[in-house]
Amino acid sequence: MKRHRNHITFSRCVAALALTVGLSVFAVQSMAATKPSSSHAEAAAPVAASGPLPANAVARVNSVLITQDQVDALLKAANAPDTPQTRSAIKSQLIARELFRQAAEKQHYDTRPQVIEAAEQAKSLAMTQAYLRDQVKPSPVTDADVKARYDAIVATLGDKEYKPSVIAVKDEATAKDVLAQLKKGTDFAQLAKQYSQGPAAQQGGAMNWVSFKTPIQPGATQGWPQPVAEAMVKLPQGGITTTPVQVGDAFWIVKMDQSRATQIPDYETTKPALRQQLEQVALQKATAQVVVDLMKSATIQQQ
Image (cartoon, rainbow, N blue to C red; front, top):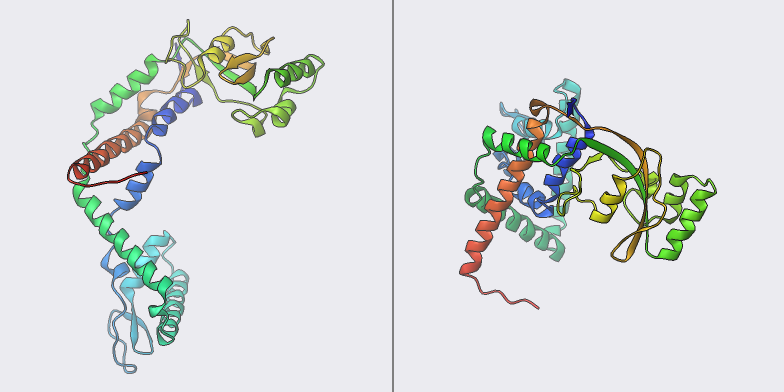
């Protein structure tokens, strides 16, 4: 098996692991993020409306100070270059924001129902973030874990890899019509954009490289429907399935754009991405455990 750096087939296999994590991990990561610095959270302190500025102040808006810490915090959050021009722009932004706040407070916007609701939501989010930081403790991912995942992915790959294009439609009559047009010389990509309801339709049905061990085994198709994978590996380069491949209620037409010996990036190339994804899985498991523990003492009604 030939090995090659930065090859997309292996990357797609790695990406499949990330899909198992789901949207819940993204939400938990956002909620469990590092606690913001006090310069973000603390309100500007009211002071005398005139006189020299204190050492750490960069401006005074009526009786409220804008501090250097606030400028530093926004500069860091924006990941912007630390230049006098950038700092001046941030200071102006903070002054404008304080003017808006004071004007809104003067007109009693703080008593409006939508403002009160937003404040309660912000409080609830901050409280939940703090709780998750304390309670969700993912298991550390070791180098051995990462290497084991790499070896497991490599073990799923066959000697050859394939780059297909596909058209998937909802009825056999449409599939046969597409095949008839292909026989007349109509461009496959054009027909995919026109008819396909399957993956990558707007890209002409063009899919990424994929590799299977042959003969195809159930559950070892890198997420592809098994009948499609079986049809794919039988096609010569440039070949198109002569009859639609039925998968449930859908009918697939497959074109083999390219095939070649499988190429795999080395371990060191893929190690950072694999580690990150395994850490996401560990975070998901730790979060799920906290949910299970909480449910044991909760009364939950659902419809």
